[in-house]
Amino acid sequence: MWYLSHIVLTILLWQNNVALCSSMVSLSLYATEYRRPGGTYSCTHCDPIRSSVKNVVQIDQNGSDISYYVNIQLGSDTSSVFSVVVDTGSYDLWVYSESCTNISCISHRQFGPENSTTLEVYYDKRFSISYGQGKVSGVAATDYVEIAGYNMSLGFGLVEDVANSFNAFPVDGVLGLSASDVQINGYPSIMAMLADGGLISRDVFAIDLGTGVNPNGGSIALGGVDTTRFTGEISFVDLANTQGLWIVGVDDCYVNGKGENFSNKLALIDTGTTLILIPSDDALQIHKDLVGSAGVVRTDGINYVIACNTTTELAFGFGGVQWTIDPSDYIGNTYDADGNCVTNIQGVSVNGTSTWVMGASFLKGIYTVYDKDNMRVGFAAKGAGGNDVYNASNPTSSVSVESITLTTSTRSLIIISMSTTPEGE
Ligand SMILES: *[C@@H]1O[C@H](CO)[C@@H](O)[C@H](O)[C@H]1NC(C)=O
Ligand SMILES: *[C@@H]1O[C@H](CO)[C@@H](O)[C@H](O)[C@H]1NC(C)=O
Ligand SMILES: *[C@@H]1O[C@H](CO)[C@@H](O)[C@H](O)[C@H]1NC(C)=O
Ligand SMILES: *[C@@H]1O[C@H](CO)[C@@H](O)[C@H](O)[C@H]1NC(C)=O
Ligand SMILES: *[C@@H]1O[C@H](CO)[C@@H](O)[C@H](O)[C@H]1NC(C)=O
Ligand SMILES: *[C@@H]1O[C@H](CO)[C@@H](O)[C@H](O)[C@H]1NC(C)=O
Ligand SMILES: *[C@@H]1O[C@H](CO)[C@@H](O)[C@H](O)[C@H]1NC(C)=O
Ligand SMILES: *[C@@H]1O[C@H](CO)[C@@H](O)[C@H](O)[C@H]1NC(C)=O
Image 1 (tube, protein in one colour):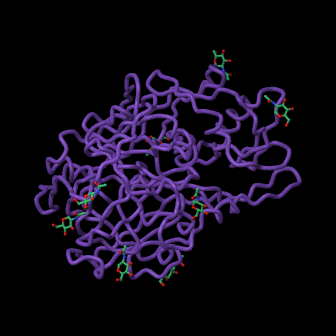
Image 2: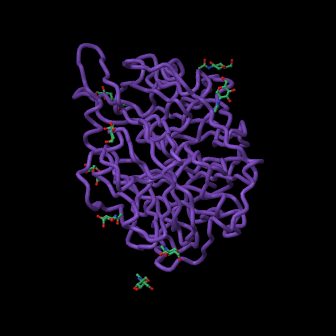
Image 3: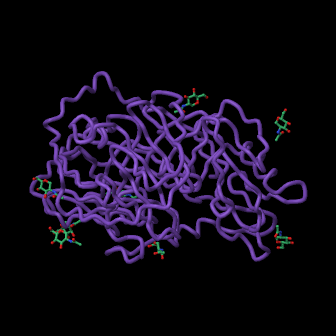
């Protein structure tokens, strides 16, 4: 049921049944685990706390390493807080519209004129976005958006029609943080607003996703990096294209230090995708080497099952540096009672055989820097910092969408078609 009509990808989860050997196991059952009945979040990592480093806001998740989100405030009512997925793989900010009656909407927070005196809705400006997860559509709107102490008037989407698959995630919308200055609805991106409005001096943001076991949670720094979150040098890799996405060339993948000899692979650095998605031939090769000659790989072409106690060293190379992914990050949920687990690397093609999607399973182990000024992505080893809590109830700066001179003519948004034949139907 994968159908990606745009490159926009987010929170991909097992949707396909895996039929391996004689046992039929429905991995889509895992998705039901993330359904929530609505109301407020009650979990340890969900406090809307902020870091004391200015311009740094906490990234939360609900302990399952599935979707990572930040809390933003929308509109004139400061109690209107929305949890939106931090998604470097898509362009748009959107939240569920108050008028939406789909299950994904009514089980999450919704936004509409009743929540804000400053909201403007443009019913004639409709948009639609297809994610790996499913499709959303709605209308364009503008209102104040507060994040990390910045309060700005911004264009965003109010989603009125949404696939039921989104109901599985404890979030109220998506914050697209692509390398484009423009959202699909034509409004400037949040980073373009901050940079063009002079609120940040560098069009750079940096992300530590955190993990379920990190008591400090994750964080996103806007306008720079949070030096407490990484150690050593940041290794930068130039973007492989200018299509408005954080896509870089892959050196290779390494198993126990030995190169797999992949060439001409590109990687979308995508915090909005849970897993690592690579074409099934590439995935099979990597899994065969992960288990070695004595091991067994079982697959339905999308999901791969190997021994849970596999400790083989796996690394991905970017810009001449090998970034190791811990076995606990590449080994996923238990598959059977015989000590086998599904891995977090799926055989999924998003753009022919060339593009890999490096999702949270990889990114949570490192610190990543998204440098639009220099069109590059940086990777660094994670640091120990991030304990600070900052009270952001008084936004420090503000900018209005009207004050921004848009140069959209020179920054046209290219929507790359990544159509692929439906798989696993
Ligand atoms: C995460 O959210 C899902 C769905 O609401 C819930 O079932 C699960 O218990 C949550 N996990 C934690 C650790 O809060
Ligand atoms: C942002 O500014 C607007 C307009 O002044 C105001 O209505 C809104 O409450 C502010 N948001 C926050 C979070 O302070
Ligand atoms: C928006 O307003 C409606 C109606 O008053 C309310 O039920 C809902 O909780 C509000 N949403 C948020 C996010 O505050
Ligand atoms: C969402 O709601 C709209 C309007 O009621 C309806 O047409 C559409 O089929 C619903 N979508 C889903 C996935 O249920
Ligand atoms: C990659 O190429 C090197 C040099 O030719 C070779 O030694 C190595 O075995 C190859 N790796 C794999 C996984 O085949
Ligand atoms: C993994 O577990 C299997 C039994 O389930 C055992 O035979 C094997 O020795 C274990 N391997 C390692 C590396 O611990
Ligand atoms: C898709 O793959 C082609 C090569 O097959 C490449 O030229 C193009 O840049 C890729 N698109 C994206 C968005 O990575
Ligand atoms: C945060 O700021 C608000 C408003 O200034 C204040 O009432 C509140 O006590 C502060 N909270 C903390 C933890 O400092």
